[in-house]
Amino acid sequence: MPVIPEKNKGFGRGKEFRDRAKEVFGNPSLTNQYLVEFSNLGNLSKLRDHIETKFRVKRDFIASNSGLLCSSASLPGTSLATAEVKDNFMGVSQEFAHTRIYTDIDFTFYVDHDYNNLRFFEGWIDFISSGSGQNDLQGNYYRRMRYPDDYKCLTMSITKFERDHTSKISYSFFNAFPKLITSIPVSYGAADLLQVSVSFNYDRYVVNAAGGFTRGNKSVNFADPEYEVSAEAQERAFQQNQSLQPTPEVPVFPPLTPPPSIPNTGTGRDGNFGQGTYGQGLPSNPNLRSVTSEAQIRDRRTYGNTVPAGSFNITPKPKVPIRNRRGRITGYRTVE
Image (cartoon, rainbow, N blue to C red):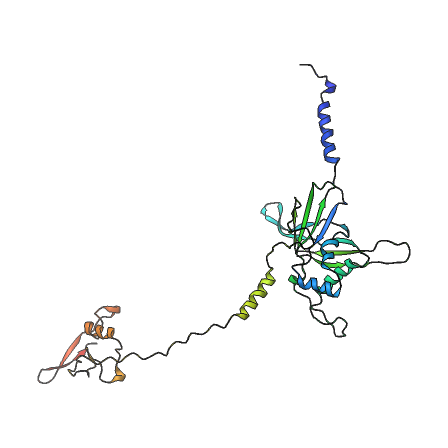
């Protein structure tokens, strides 16, 4: 094996480093290849009709040409709100994320010869604040904001790609709407292209590294992706459904009927049938009757009208017979 001189030992490694550096730094991403897309507002029929009828902007322009006129855009930024904790470890403070914060995103659009782009965003904002339904030329005009589900656009995206279209990244915004339209200066002198800057607010965005955000066909009438209805819409639908439900009927129970009378059977203590106040018979006076069921009658017949000795911690008191002059027992007396 030939011996490599000391001065040539690093030649192969240096060439490998140069090739790798050329591969990394020789093909950077450029800032002027991107595409902004809006849907045709198919999920927002009221907003689309308002822009078409009052501001004369066709839906074909919204879906096909509005994004192409975007002269500058910015990829969205995000941050995390944190809370500081100092009690877990002595002398060490830690932070924990609790909320993800999305910042507004800004776009600048060229204004076409027919001012379609300018009228499109003006109509969008006008629809948000025109919930009163009054003519805005009236003197007593007032504003009423619409529900978010009526003006938040579901499908809005910005795709950053390269010239060969083999590498791209797509940001898809959910529930976006224009929040701010900046003033447009005009002046005499050298002519320049008229542009309008619009700031959008959105609920969240999703990064699709493959750049394949599914929106059906790429034609003008592409379909909006499926999405879940917001909490506000679910609450309104629930309240409307509850109001349409019939009032439940209150069940009507038949009136209570008194229990059937129990015949006064048996012989009382005084020996008269049905007239005794002790023993197995019922009292002859209905107002004094206390037995109201067959079970109680059977219990009286089996156990009598007294409780067994020792029940409920009751100690029976001795009774002494009462005799008359002839020595006959006429009754009993309880010894206190």
